[in-house]
Image 1 (tube, rainbow, N blue to C red):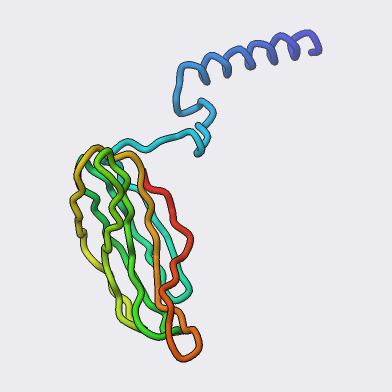
Image 2 (image 1 turned 90 degrees about the vertical axis):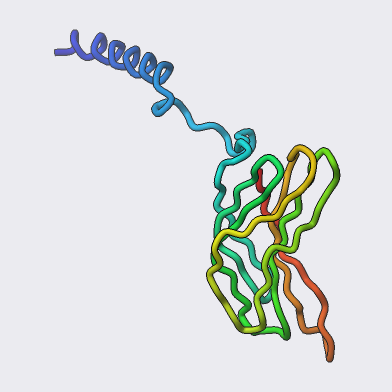
Length: 148
């Protein structure tokens, strides 16, 4: 019995090595830090701010960015919230106001699009809201999420 275990183990290890090298499904996943999405690929996006959030998808095309999903303003602060998509292209940087939701409201929106000139380099999605500050309000944005 001992005489078969070692050769069997070596044979199985060799088989799995061959399969891993020949099959992308079995190969080790790429690091998310180095994996780049191609233009035209749908990407899940979830961003929030002090008083709002957006969950949906974003697709960057050659000269257009499209988004759809749900947006909400929680009503904890005065006034509205908005989703911005910032695109850096070979022609410049464009902060595109994408969709706004009123205070203490929410809705699901179908695909909307915004055009930009030049070749896409990188982008971010950011949710911003009016935040109470004493008797007035200040525009406050959450952490941006990279889109590619």
